Length: 140
Image 1 (spheres, rainbow, N blue to C red):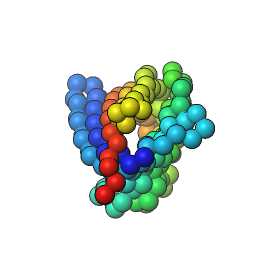
Image 2: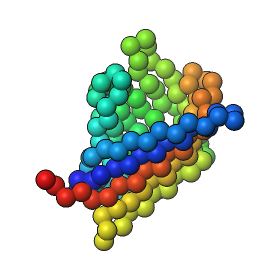
Image 3: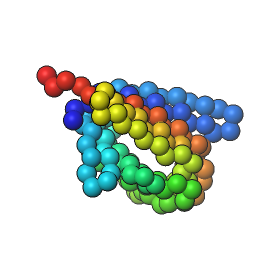
């Protein structure tokens, strides 16, 4: 199903807070008890394809293209992922505090609410709150 996606990211580190917002067009689909949101994102390095997978207790953000990243999530568990850069591969760790997703068949709209602590190479980079809303988009 084609969707219009709004991604809002709040990053808190100590007393500072940054907010990033993105609007993208992509697809939403369900496959084997998991829900997927897929979209392309223009970044400084070029285009990156992003896939977000959520099931009851787990989530995964995969990026490929200009940026290659694997970020896994499981409620109240520490998991390891990785982030590929031109300078090498960085180990990243997540500790998931909240992982909720909703989808309304009638309106074709839904949301993903993800709150996690992120570490890169073992050092904390802050608490990330990813709030994604999406709604069905009529195909042109």
